[in-house]
Image (cartoon, rainbow over all chains, first blue to last red):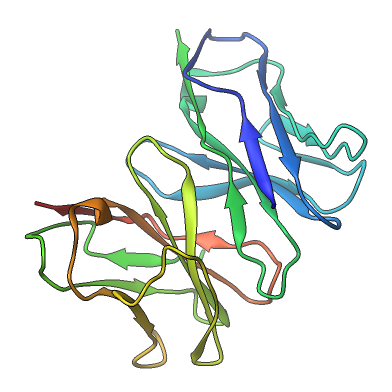
Length: 113
Length: 113
């Protein structure tokens, strides 16, 4: 079936460090891929998305490229800030009739000053 | 900017009691969803709703669960007889068209004692 696998957390980085959070997926067809972020005490917010192979989603300095050949959608940021501390969820829309999202387990990121 | 709202933010209930979780989706959205996140686990799809009926549901969404859109603005999730394992964060989401970006509410944290 369709699924999303994320790297295990927590991830702890120093400010200005480079971030990569790995995400791979299994899906039939051509799903859309998403990264959602959950800041402490808040709901899920869309961070970025990509709807087809080789698309790059970007927002707030974060980027992820839809790689069909490796079924991956890794999240990257060149220089993290303390305010980026949050839980990051990779998700796919499997393209089914109603479009419900399938999420990974989430990766908690803590950025230290 | 329009947003999805949920009430209450926290609810504590006794096992066997009924609970109703409320959501107000974004006003021009037509597709509505409930997800849940048990502590430390991934966000899981429960049910999707369109045109006043359930369009898709997961195996989690058994006979103890029901959804309703009682008026033009609210979307509710009812759990008839809560179990300890229903303790989770419940997220409502909505979208204007299927497979477009889903916008999430801040969640209701349900604790069943």
